[in-house]
Image (spheres, rainbow, N blue to C red):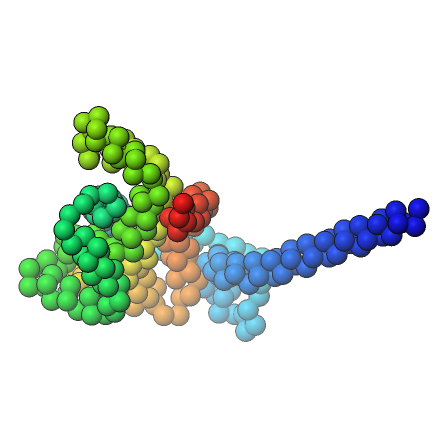
Length: 291
């Protein structure tokens, strides 16, 4: 009887400790979420405040009693924000499509094809990740300028159609597929391209989706290269457009209108991440797991 009582007490204590652990975990996660999400809340809040209300607040308030959408109207009328969106959409879709083609073919070649010097070539290829981006940007700028491709979509897109990291990630994913499938397909007379299209890509779909989404985010947020290679407003992206808005659109003091433009620019990426965040996590974890 005493043993049963002791066991019951121990079980109750364990359950109590587990509840305390969960409560502390949720409290810490909630606190961290508030810290992470507060800048987004402040951005949206500021974007719905009028210019006069914002300037009259000596101590910024965490709410507003008179929200307005005028700032969003100004975001599309004071500058060519719609044009910036179109440029960014073209740049993002074309760059991502070309990069996916290059990445898939390169990863397949390194994962399945056999040719002399493959390991050495892949090692040298990975060593490119050690080169600082600033050096690559300088080289690309000189090449694109000498080719007369400044202020063109081609000049914007070409330097971004390859990624050593994405090729490495997809190659590791391809190598998880048993090689026996490839040998059996070759015995049946299946071409390399058909095997890649019918077998490898469907199996590696989570990683493919992850790479595509990450590239879209990368292109949408691209700033240094577009700013360097374009000085014609007709080819500005949304990231460059923010600076143009600040300098020649609303002015440096009109923070609410600036915040409205930032909200409009941020919405597509936020929606994209909310829809595909599970696939992103699954693809990254799958790509980095052997066996």
